Amino acid sequence: MKSILLLTFICLFTVLKESTAPPVGQMLMLNGVVKNQFGLPISHCQVKILGTNDKTKTDSGGYFSLQSDEDRGILVFQSKGFRSQRQAFSPSLVNFEIRLQPDVAESEETFLFVSDRKRVGRPSVANTMGVSSPFFPSETRPQFNTEGYDFIAENGFRSVKENALSTFSIDTDGASYSNLRRFLKNGNPPPRDAIRIEEMINYFNYDYVEPSGVAPLAVNHEVGVCPWDEDHLLVHIGLQAKKMDAKKLPNSNLIFLIDVSGSMAAANKLPLLRSSFKLLVSQLRPEDRISIVTYAGSDQVVLAGASGEEKEEILLALDRLQSGGGTAGAQGLRTAYRLGRDHFIKGGNNRIILATDGDFNIGPSSDAEMVEQIEGARESGIYLSVLGFGMGNYKDNKMQKIANYGNGNHHYIDDINEARKVFVHEFGGTLFTVAKDVKIQVEFNPLEVESYRLIGYENRLLNDEDFNDDKKDAGEIGAGHTVTALYEVIPVGVKNKYSTSVDTLRYQKVEGRSSGGMEGEMMYVKIRYKAPQGSESKLMEEKILLGKVASPSQNFHWSAGVAAFGMVLRQSELRGSANTGLVLELLAMGKGIDPYGYRQELIGLVENVSLLAGN
Image (cartoon, rainbow, N blue to C red; front, top):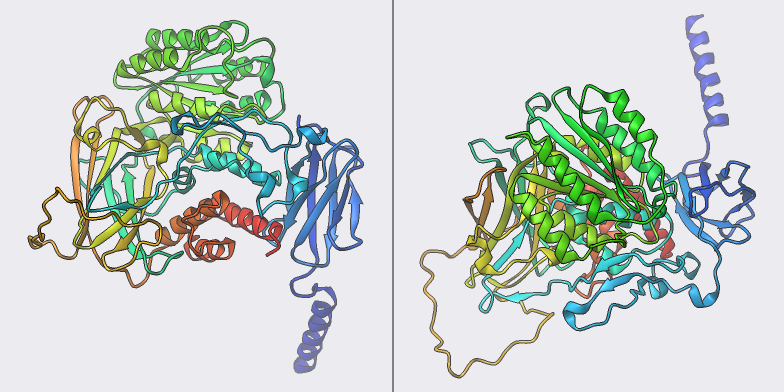
């Protein structure tokens, strides 16, 4: 009897399972909201799946739901008065927030981003990547735009015989990645000069060996075959900063310098700014001090030296912020520094956090004046970090300079999840410096290396003599943070496809080099850093041997995948065989543990780009 009942149950379960389970790879439920450029919902917007008859319309709140019989495809959004937009979907990308741009005259449809190209003799003209990019259809081109980005001249291959040394300042900023993520989520190609590959790589933390001695940094390295050119090698260099118990972090004297000008009225600016700072306030301890300075047509002290215990008062002050007026940022900066001095904590974390869309247009606001002021305060122990918000007039170039000169971080906050990453998940690394003026100098061995190129860091390059100059400013690294740098290396005996050779010099004596017992050494890495309150640098050294690891680590695969994606987006001439397929393969091998979903999000973005390209 028991056997009959058991058989009946199994049969019934099988029937139910077959009748309710959707076919493999089908039946995705797509959900989302459609908004205008100000973050307001768009009702009655048509949402359809390209190449099918499946479609729906958004409700009064801009929300939609649409079921797809296929597990991959492209959504098309169309609404009167707005430009049509496309968005790819896949099993890992089914929830959307779409921002439609107004439909403007054809003459204004140029994809325009201001870039400072004066350093290479070019005028400051539009970056027009989006017009001809193979990854984005013409419907996705955004409206006229005055965002500012410094021109990037991509690092090329350098001959070791002529340039044996490579020197640069570290960079732990993540602004470039979150900014280009904003473009990709909206179905638009990011400007070339907005793509800083080192910031893309360093947006993610890596699993490195931690410091074991008194030094606040540990050096990690790995060598493998270059994924986009198998004749080349890829060298992965990683720094791991000392982690600190949250209870042992230095007391903080924080000054929020908040732009409340008229340009900050949009939903993704001041309202998002308020929510972001509230996350930071939740992390404060009674020993911490908070001041709030706002600036518009003039500056105003909203709060001066409040205890971290007075959270309700701080939150109320944030809720009362309203936008309107000009942007007298320079005067606000002076007031913020005054408050920083008034409430200075010796041996503590004294820091201004500037939150703005980057538009300084009233009062003395030249870069030279601000840099002089920021550098002077930096030497007295008051650092400056920058949070960027919004789109359309975001001045990335000015924000990056301010953060670099202020010994601080530069983050672009595109949504509340990014604010949570910066102020909650990576709180210590964001606000608490463990080493400053960190520089790296690599010497390549001409016996083993013909040429090399540093991937990214174009705006962080230093003169070789700057490495030993303790007066030369460089980058900072926060508690628990990692820094990663990649070199693509052409070994001796492999032809350099990217540059032509130079004739032998007539007046230079050519001699054979003695190995000196250094065969097999590929490069020698030196790192200088200072203590947060120090003025004299300390030196770390590490040699890297020639050789390829049999099984590259997840760190290696992930960093290579991110770098390859940056080269694909930039349409770099040095990308070799890199395409979105290779990127996805590398990211899949390197994803590893992903507690907050940051890595999966990037995989979804790459899938989106790949689908829009018709792959």
